[in-house]
Length: 244
Ligand SMILES: [Zn+2]
Image 1 (cartoon, helix red, strand yellow):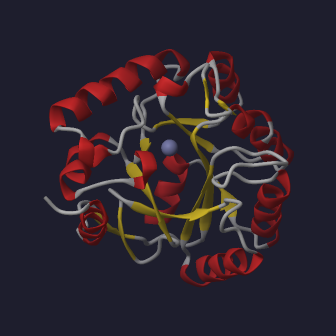
Image 2 (cartoon, protein in one colour; image 1 turned 90 degrees about the vertical axis):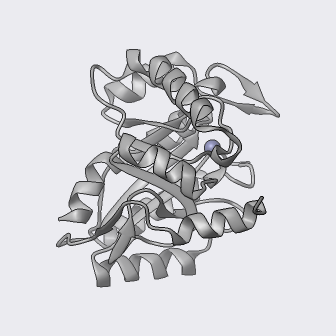
């Protein structure tokens, strides 16, 4: 059995749904994983101030729960963000690393999350997926690729040129790694290559987790994108802009 890091590396190298970006303008997405309640209450308020919509990758098992001090979303949050036009996206039900699950278990987990989310979708389809913990294998990429229009990992980078819709790159807005230089470089590159930057974070708080952002970090991303005149769209809409 391959080690997990090698499994991830091989998975990233194997383009399962290759595509060429042919968009005529750069685009960005702001996404929240899991998601903590503050991603909606604080993060959503910041998005509203900029009149943009985000993508909330939702794992059903976190609904209404607090885990290790993190308070997660509840059903009223899902209703509110859907009403505000944000995208509800799939992040597995149990938030397990996909390489650990058999195809039968992946199918059951996906079905359970789809049934949980259905009441909040207003008849819309789930189009976007993010691998829990960013963990994929070639097998699990092949499993998920036909089920969504776009699938996101957590490998750092912007999406440009030849991409894999079964594992899109992403840029963190996380306390442990956020830097102005990294943000500026990503935006410059997206402008130059008509790239797609898929930002991701978790909680949004003045005292965020290592994986979360302060409101100031998220505001800085939104401000810099606005200055660069890069549109911010939910993943399901950004993918169309990116493919051209
Ligand atoms: Zn997650």
